[in-house]
Image (cartoon, rainbow, N blue to C red; front, side, top):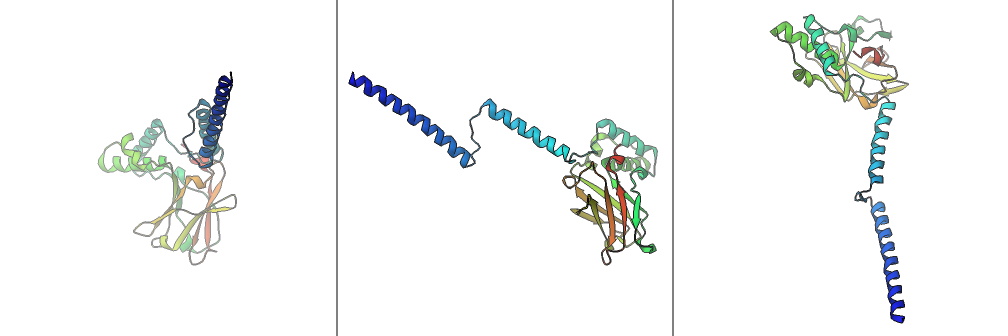
Length: 228
């Protein structure tokens, strides 16, 4: 009888120790940041929910790229460029909001937003005008990028390097991560990360002289107006 009682007590003790060991092990995994958590359906569902929440948060923040193109839209851009051997994308020109200078050297001919649609149409126009060939969807994919948006300012020859460009949205100044001037110095292009922009809200593009920032021109950006 005593032997049976001892055996039962020993079994209970081992079971308790096993539970404690499991609890401590699980605690250590969480505390130490281990990713080797038990593969339960609850864990998988939680991860799916987390991914969904992150995606929805990005969309609500306006970080979704609104200029993405379907194959049909790409073909539309190709055909539009093909019809005009001198296509320049006038529909993508930004309207002038204000300017603080009357100096002719500070005047700009045009400022454009460079969406993938505009790039594709310009390429298609050049290819058809010069080589009598129609661009393909596969070919123009190299002009399509959804991680940034760029703008080009056409200025007086030699002035591109003397100017700077920044975006302003809801009182916040957004700096470009990339700036380029062409060889003639009459075109300046800047690129902004899409993660820095809320495409639901209006913004402006400010172009100013590096040596005298008080001389500037500001252009209106209504992002939705350039979706085609």
